Length: 233
Length: 390
Image (cartoon, rainbow over all chains, first blue to last red; front, side):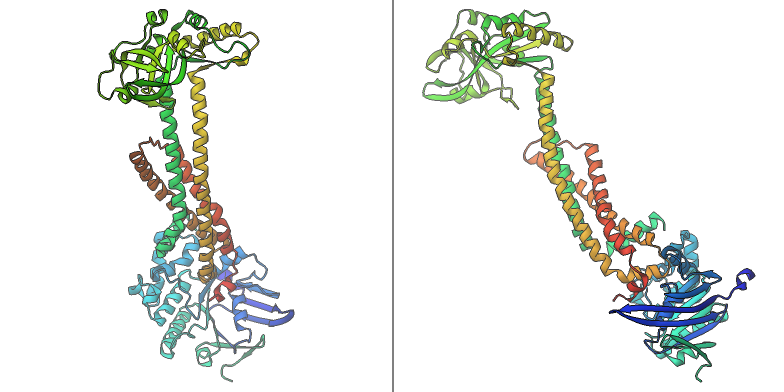
């Protein structure tokens, strides 16, 4: 266990991302550097168009930077091939999306099992782990419901269970409360704080300062540049 | 991801849109069932014709004189000389002419065969009444006739024709026998026939000699020897005119039949194969639509760790499952269609295991061939683009 702690969980150095749009180069990220340790609860806050979604895609290994380097648990991942990235997403990152992104035709349990299927885990163990994750988010009694039979808050908790099931070192939330009302949103955040207390590293991407305040550390992003500052200040 | 898991996913997605899946399968169902039915009919026909040819006796030789130059026929004596060959059991030279046969005011046009007594045994006839043509009838050029069952019925109705007189091309013949009903073969009816002595036929039709001889060997083992001997004798008669005669044995005949029915089966199978191909294009079409519709699903799966190969296998299995399921249903429908056809139009339908395996294998192959492009398209979607897709 201690071996992996030699490196920070996430180290990003001078990462830039450029898009070419109609012959014009658009810099979504401009020389971003960031280090996140194990067990942190970090909020990355910024207005729309600030590049926070691009940053989240790169942190989540869904996209690769134009330049710069990204070490995940000491492994340089910014130049890896698609298949290797898929494997890293599967083992190291749990996504929690704004619009839940559950598969509508699968039951809650099957949705939670999905990342374990791609890991090649056997049926029995897989079901056990998925059940365990659902129990953790308080949905042990909703395992055979489809997403359409669940409320928004429940759906997001299923999504969190799915992110937890593979026991990845990072939980990456992209506006996880964006589609929920304030009360349910707070409940979901409460759950995430509990998970953080249990040792999960959580990165939240949001534009909402109230949401960001739940985190222990706030990083601001504007026009593709990061500013580390203290909360509301 | 395991294949079993992929199958489960595919079944789930097929069952989720039953109507669409069924319509997609329909092309394959129709294709496979028509392959099964049509090839079944082709093989049934082939089997029946083969059986008929074999029922004539496998140790049968047919000599046809095609004629060239001045000698275009065998004389009766030359034909009979063939009967003296060692190993020959029966030899029946015969001439065959279409003639009008008249009884009272009723007249039919029928095949009048002039031959000898051996013809009876060679063709496997049985008498219903009276007697067959005998050697003495030939020797004395008797004007006697033996009627086939259908011809007798046409002329006499249900009255007994034996002892009555008919006119063949104007000449009076006494009916001495009635053949028992035998049915028909690919070579025509056995029952629409009038048989008269060969020598009498030469006079009535003013044609000397015979163009056809049936020869039956004593056993199948002697057939080749007999055939060689017959050909040697004919070669002497038709010196330097090898194209003037043909000697067929049943095996040659069977080969001809097989090549004809083989072509038939191939043509029927080909047409059905084209409809299978069209079915495959239908699958590709629907799979492409399905990939577009499920872009977001693909994005989610990729985000949580599905590799290219996982997505490819998922969509490929779905396409193959649809086409294989369609193939299975098609085999069922093909059996039903085959038995319906055999009941309705009284033809034999023979289903061979090979054909069924081939049709099923082909439908699976079609699933792979036409599924690979949509599946590849799905596998190559970028996760961020797919996730953003609404």
